[in-house]
Length: 640
Image (tube, rainbow, N blue to C red):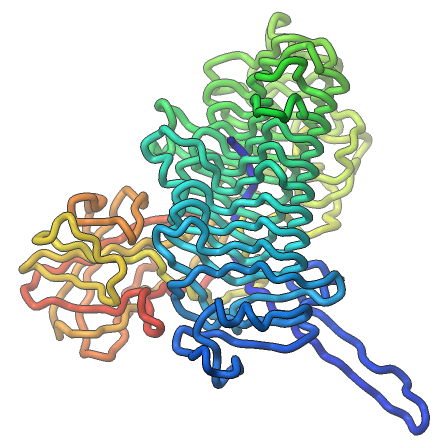
């Protein structure tokens, strides 16, 4: 049901195969060497060793599938994908499901990816699974699925590598996994699980379901979803690392009745956004459960939760008990986590004694400074508590959570904790938790530094003074630049609304319109989450003019609600405008209007926001929408 996985936006996958053949007289020195550059895919992958094909929205299935003469449909392309083949998808919005049931081999994988970082969107409204990979030995990357009736992307086959995927606007689940040996990296699910808006459904943005075995999720981001962030249910051998979950419904990371699950080096936080409250409260950070499922029994076992940060959520870490006879916390390790500003309780364990054994809760920071309730544990049998830090005061003995070498006092950070910026959670040298931990299996910290750095392990996710041995986990798929860079962010959620047709949706239109007679407003959703920790130098909105309102003034308004979808928004359901913050002037047809949004983006970096274009004039201005194959709206951001 519930689940975590942080999250988070994406480098497009590029694989280049270079084969060198050097033939000496009478002697073949060597036949070929394949060099595969994969942007974090398994370097042993052998995808793309065979023929290469192309598909385009403007192609034809009578074509040979070359770059100059691409196929038109995925159905046609699928027929030629043999082991080792590569399918490049050219940029555009496709109205056909991408279903890959083809079978590669361990040495000749099949690759499906966007061509030269072009944006590929698959929008098959009201289709259960716009993208499904049910085959074997498949690599897929650089594809976005939107407006699914059920799951945006379903990975149900085996030996699948997926990277730089995005899901928006799905009804039940975002990324759904029910196969074996599946790796997902640098991907994001947001503004999905829409059936949960009514608070009567329990979908997950990132879902591992019964039958899933061998899932690896790295640098995956789930946010602004009306369901659980990460939900691992009846799944085996799962590892979630360097991931991000925030502002999801009920829980950000959920591990439910699954054996051999590790959640590490990940980050969950909860803002005060009531859109994602359930029963009037924020989601929990990390939840462990053992719900009852027919024929499954009690299989919660060997769970590792280490080196995670949870900030400002309802419960920090919780276990609400087992619904299965003879269930319990079996071999659960909760180590070196930092739990801050929990609303209800930093730690809550309603655990039974039936199966509880070999469980250790050690080296954690439990901030109780704003909590309504004390940390609590129902039964101590089978659990070892030690070396935990309690910030406000030591819990009472009746709470059953204290242990040897506990520390009481406030933690000192090197900088102010800031949502979305993991670097802001590093400890200062004089923090009370330094050198106060016990040696555990968490021998590296959140940032990849080795433990111990001093005389003993530090308590919490960070080992002060440790040398970073691996790249710092970041909450977004975009790598941290060393200097200034220009980033183009395509606007993929846009639509205009029409007061005269107040219940009609125009999200599929190729136009965006602003007019005052009749009233038409353009809504644009801006995803600024990848800039949470960046310094913004400039940010400009770019709009291509299709029909001008020359030299006339138009306005841009802010809203306080980004919870809408281009496929459903109407004038009656539109988010309300809050305040006018920008004025710009129209241009001639074929021109690019540039609107300076630097101050606005600086104030809202790290968020998903909505702006509205309104015209006070009776002469409408028309722009190209994201439904066009070219001249789509975008933001150009210079940052460092």
